[in-house]
Image (cartoon, rainbow, N blue to C red; front, side, top):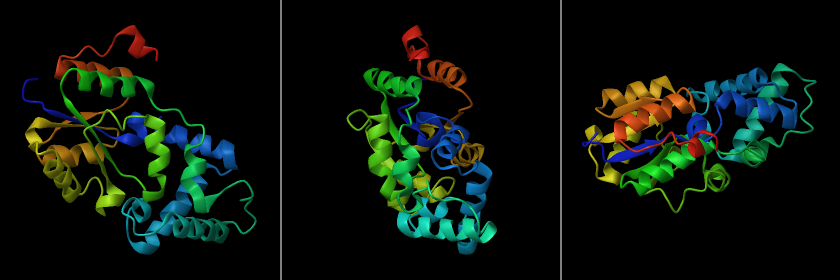
Length: 225
């Protein structure tokens, strides 16, 4: 597609494993069931009147403060809960430990860059998690831009966050593509005039991206990486 100039990749669930898988891996590490942890996250966010991860993704709280509040929320619902394996005040380090990137999508970022497209990461993320997730994906020397919600104090699906990306890149919305696994984010970007690709799985996303860009992304090496 000749009018596509900049391809933006979401991190969580696109360049990383699916979010449910991350919660399951965290349960293996800590014993905390996903529904229990998500309820605590929601409780902390509800106290502030914001969406579940907005307290840290918009840097309303430090990771340490958020972890302390998570512990209180967990104990409020279950005073006997076992938190002996959970390091909630340094959550990101434990969350990302041993987590591999989504290799086929990482390869796609590199292939698009080689083909002459500008590429970036548009992520709802956390200040204290940056060193962990950027090391995990290993794209610092590849991407043109990283726009992180915790640095901007605004997050997907807020229009202001997408505007930051447009201003930083200098590329108009109609020439920009967002690849994201969250429907709400896709809908928000589309409403602002972006091209969008709703990620559901690797083969679907790579097939659509190959059609949009004309770049070969489904070679066996990419599919099986």
